[in-house]
Length: 126
Image 1: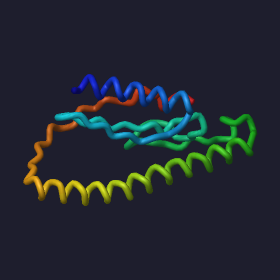
Image 2: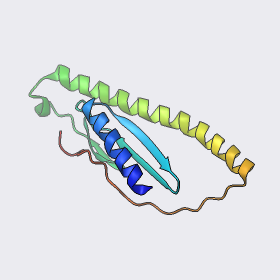
Image 3: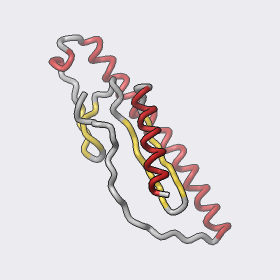
């Protein structure tokens, strides 16, 4: 199942890159989960990955094109806002659903730990 998720992740990451869009994705197959994101489309001024993200938006990066610099700043702020508010809202709904399903099924879950698997995107090079 883990290979199935890795293959699905690779395809989704390719779509995000092809269409130059940001995204946050969680996949599941029996016994495994895979969560990843792309916060580095071409308009993003974010450098690094969570939890160590920086903003890179100096005039020199834009050769003095203040209009493009401001546009990228606005688009980045909009991207982070859209991702965070949609994740928070959906997350609360899914937590409620999980509680209801777990109670109804007397489900117990075992934490298998976290296995880091960095995004295939290269957040350090824009």
